[in-house]
Image (cartoon, rainbow, N blue to C red; front, top):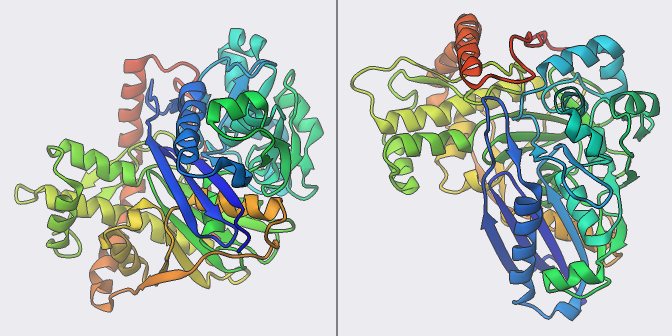
Length: 515
């Protein structure tokens, strides 16, 4: 052990978390701050970048600094939610709130327009995925078309972590993985900007230079060091999107490894043998050079169980879990479609909404809470079936995130999918992966270093398979059966808010077949 210290900080959807480690992965200090997001209209999700991303990071860094010898810090790395769109001027002043990743669904018309402009097949081939609400390009186009005064003042664009890196170092840089999610601006084969498309979509915006997540891209400036309570000159690595940093922290680094990230949303990252694209999934660069990953995301997961908690009187979460544990699998014939904020994979429907089917007077809050878990688990099973292929079979599932605590949710997921899940011994998350990236970037450890250790394995219970197969069949049939009615209701919601830029724009249809 060298004694050098590494700082990792992650800006998630619901909180910012920081960790200080030694070069062998031992945790020395932790800190966190909870925050929320702004939901100004149905289908919109934003954040005040200066207050939330930067402000929380400063507070977390200062708390960490108070627990350590700051002179011993030899590297720092930051990850964050993404891909997001934050526009700023040349002096890093945000020109509007940051627009969040796929849970913000305002740019449906722009998705359609850009797909028609460049061609659906050409986009999938060049960018690794179809345009969806996860893409940055359509959101850039939305701002340009709907907020011309904002566009006129904007010269740069950032993800959450690249904005913070700029504030820390003065460097305008973005990592290759995040860039590969910023469709259609980046060519995943060339591992470089798609200059012609980028010039058209982001006309007037400077493009940041590219780096790999572990690479040191600058040093902590005197001004930033004073604000954070750290020493000037600390090397800062590029960082990346939080889900990939978390996968890295959990040892999801070999072909066939699949991470399930249990959080406010559910996210999936699978390491591939080589490049291939799927019409319902996202192919991206991985965290490491020459690596490709396949990803998917659900728009609501932990946020749905929080909604149930608030709806039923804000009972302690532990009580709800205990009550739901006493309910039989299948929640006595209750099924939940968890599309409360639209949905990303696999339906890519901004106008999807939640459906609770089978309610009776004998159902209580425990049934609803369990059915929410089971509905999310059915969505997970659906996505896992898309991810698993002859070309890239899933060999191992690794469960990470706050939702792995308590055991009920992960057990239901294993029962519904029929697959075991490894739960890492260290569950602190993406910030731990950031610290490892900083250790690699500064040369303290070799690139192949892996701090992950399996703490436990959740095995599926065969006795629940039959009932969950029935629930899953109803789940997969429920969306197409209610789609037309739900879309009509979502339009009523939009009309109530005078939905700018979306109105009656058609929702992009996606083929449901596999390839």
